[in-house]
Length: 172
Image 1 (cartoon, rainbow, N blue to C red):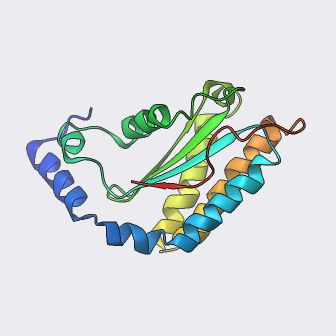
Image 2 (cartoon, one colour):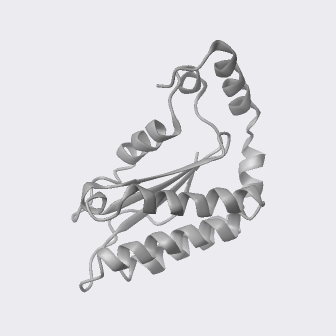
């Protein structure tokens, strides 16, 4: 939890209330979600990682009021969607919170040992800088490619293996 003042907390709640499903659909139309799924599927053919992409228009009000951070929410979704539950411990969650204008990446312990926080932050910046310019589609695909390249480098494919997690993005 964060230590926000009452005014900051109210402002944050209002920001989340104002974030609409229509805003999320404008930023991430079906064509962008389909392209993201295709990029994840193609990337997973070249490495042993499992990539999940979750976009959330806003946090539930009680979580906003309780001061749940973007990182805490990403960690919770990482667990809720079983991204941690892969054979090689190499699941990666890319989490976008539209109301907060923030991106977080959570990597399973197998990956976390090889890829440092600064590298993940650079991928997050690819998205947030693109989003600031209204380039949601291009920034999303660029970030997914960066994640795939990192996974190819550290966890190259070693023959056929099952797809352990769905490749389709999740809109919350």
